[in-house]
Image (cartoon, rainbow, N blue to C red; front, side, top):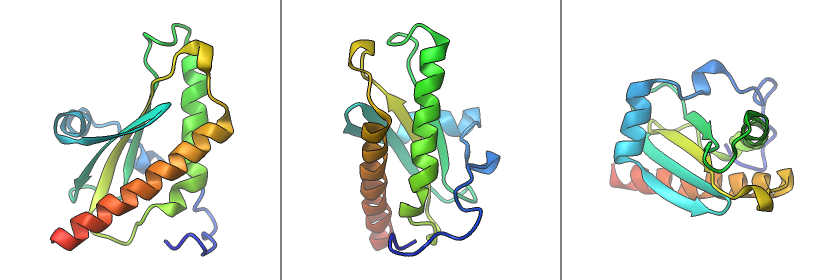
Length: 138
């Protein structure tokens, strides 16, 4: 979708079909995927054609954030940033993405929502470039 277009009604939902939960697909993603480092986020992605739409996973390591409250808050913020900006990601291609957003900044340097949102937007732009490269190869 062109970033200048207004998304249609209901586009800002984050549905169950967009969540990456299949163990088989998660193993495939981390086994064969490429990574982009955009501190404080690491994005692992894999292009595939066997899923109907892009699927996303959000993770905050327990090693960095011991309390579940803190991990859940960061995951919630990442999900919200993705949900509000996913229209920047190309959807009309046959190649779909498996994406994992992994937060990797220590507790003392916690990010603001605005910083997370700008990193998610940057990652979506980079992922669009990957989709374009994949389309040119085909």
